Length: 459
Ligand SMILES: Cc1cc2nc3c(=O)[nH]c(=O)nc-3n(C[C@H](O)[C@H](O)[C@H](O)COP(=O)(O)OP(=O)(O)OC[C@H]3O[C@@H](n4cnc5c(N)ncnc54)[C@H](O)[C@@H]3O)c2cc1C
Image 1 (tube, rainbow, N blue to C red):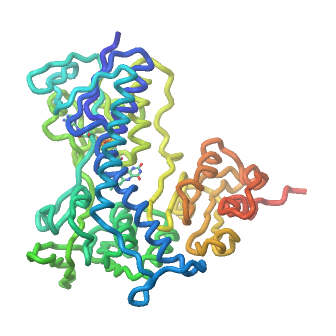
Image 2: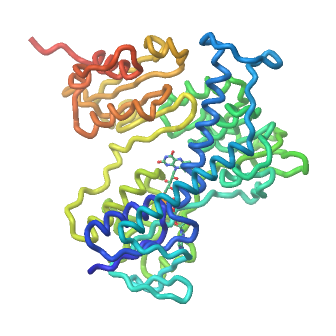
Image 3: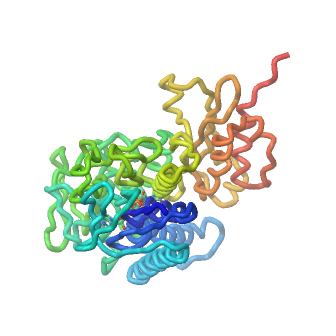
């Protein structure tokens, strides 16, 4: 029986473990913080739980516009959240999800060892004094928040997202440094909870890695709801002044707030693991270098998830882990294909995307047609007062095969599935256009966008 040892119990690790036991391997996971990893315990699941509360607070605030009476205070619909209750729920839910996942892997026959692991040989994993022999090792150790020396998080006023659920009250004036996906999600979430938010963005617009039209819509929503977005400037330093924070910007300006949340990137958890000593190559940022079947430069050692920096999403981590096990245990396997990964930014409205981008079309990398259908013409969007958003579809110039799409709107994370299926299955815009959508529905905009990309057949 092949002995598999997995270091790290996040989605990169536990999903791999489930595949490995299914294929008959003897599997051990070593994890130091809890099964489910940072994904379940501190990052993805807690943030989405918090966002769920934030979104509902926003619904209530906006309810009056749909004819619902809401008590007013100071001329605004009166909604306030009890942060202690919110945070207790976030932590309870995260722990319950971790417990469920741990129970599942143990039930399937995986041995779980709590502790910190390192490699002492490509085939030996050390946990304290214990040595575990392995035929195959999977490194799935994740990553942690990057810190700036001039803005060291103290957990009190200068925070990373892992400190957020231990605050005793809602930050009155929250400054979020970094306007990538994580920064934008938290800025929007705390805005929804009732904080006054300033977002510091080093770029011209927020979320520079996302579709430009989508980022513009969201930045417009943020500003309209009162967020201050400071563009093209960096936080040089952040100081805890005792009763607040003082952020000094690269252009010399200063911003005062009650708390500062730093979202300036991730550092892989690859130090002190013994990786380079056993020949595993890391890149300059410390990320494990892997090929598309998750192999590292050392035979028998695989890596998956955020520690590889490939595309820091739970779904990608899980797929890399599964691919590693299929490959290591001799199953047929398709290499990781990033061109079909769907992802969502959980702002309100949400921004979901999959496949090729409009940037790919504009740069000439692909020969394709693009349509952008604003949501404000959609009857369901009008009924729910959801006018911010659009459906963008990209299809091959000649064949009409759907190559990608972007949806900004409520529940875009759910709506994108139709486009994902089309991209994965190489469906054409005609296929999508002939598919029934419910009337009235937001998904009606997906089929309508497809219809507008149809071309008359040549005579
Ligand atoms: C705020 C935030 C929100 C996010 N939201 C989403 C989202 O909505 N959707 C999405 O797809 N992705 C999201 N992500 C990304 C997602 O959380 C990561 O991609 C995912 O956690 C990666 O999984 P992983 O298995 O690589 O690592 P992790 O989930 O980080 O798990 C790694 C595990 O390894 C353990 N470990 C590390 N070193 C050792 C060692 N030496 N010995 C033993 N154990 C060790 C750690 O303690 C941890 O338990 C979000 C990330 C952040 C920061």
